[in-house]
Length: 115
Image 1 (cartoon, rainbow, N blue to C red):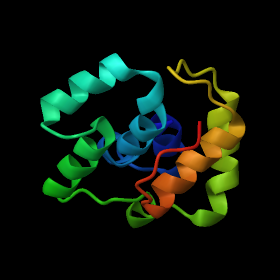
Image 2: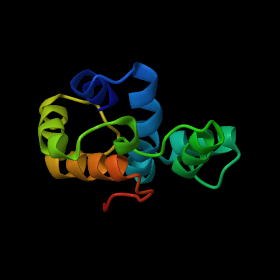
Image 3: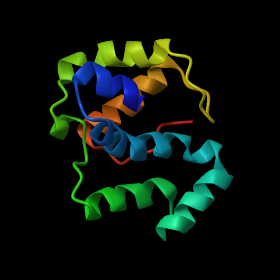
Image 4: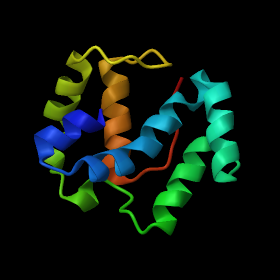
C-alpha cells in the first residue's frame, strides 16, 4: 500500500510508510495476534497500532496522508491501484477494505476497520 502511495503521490519512502503503517496495522491487528503481540511488547504499548501511532507522535511524524500533501480527489484512483495489486496480507482484503484503510490514513482516523 505504502509503495503505491509513494509512487502515485510522489512521496518519500519514509513518509509513505511511516504514515500509512499504523493504519494498516490497525486493520490487520485482529488477524495477526502473535505478530501484533510482539510489536505491542517492543513498543511498550497496549496495542500494536496504538504503539505505532504513539511512536509517530513522539517522532513528530504527520498523522495523516493529507498532512503529507496527498489529494483527497485521488483517493478512489489510489484505492483502485492498490486493490489491483496482489498484496499478501494476514487479513482478507477487498477493494472496499483498501478504500477504508486509505480513507483512515488520509484523514488520520485512528480506528480499526470493521471485520
